[in-house]
Length: 177
Length: 121
Image 1: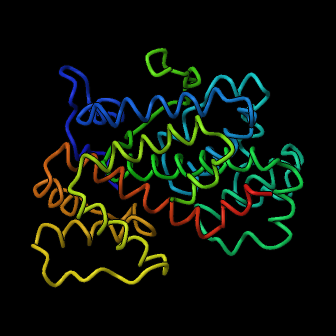
Image 2: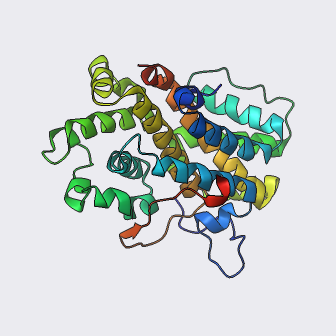
Image 3: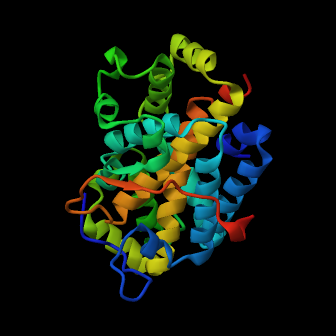
């Protein structure tokens, strides 16, 4: 894994980071940010649940950038650091994570790591805790989290060091609506 | 139709955004390369047969070798491997290639957990 950018910034004066590198492809960037904003602002699935899945993906894919970012909407919904600390191997025994969040984490592990983890019981638990619409949105989210983490890592955009950073939750772009 | 797009059948707005994102990423590359990336990544997951690379140029074979590392070895890809793909596709091409390849991997995984079936209830 490299922390030396493998692609230059396309924005003069800015260092290489996900946004400045994606600017090499403005149409892709515009479409992605419209999608990501729409996903995060949808109320079908709570931001806290989405963030639980995103944090698990960050740990499994070893995405340091993803691991150190928090979205403020999830923080406001009670996703504090004590809960985040439990999103590690052995989360099944956590007293801080809800049964819904544990079902979401099992699904996340199955999608990003090993589909065999989604046993009949795990599948039934997911469908008991989430509606079909929520599962669809969760599936989109985990797909995007995984793809973005891998794209970021393989383009060498991992920071050498990064403090924990709370960012505004991605929003729907006015121009995209 | 991709697994994720199929799962989003009940949310036409998100489905349209996702389809647009994939379409924009794929439009930045040669359609033949996009198809080969999808086949190569799907082969790693055991979903499809590996593409026939015998008639491909060296640059395309290098890109496909890189793509095959994305599913299970993304942290092991070296600077030299990335530089070889950048040399073949250019920086904007490499950015699109990275997105398309990572999405291809994630889409295979969504299919393997039967995301459309889960989202159908």
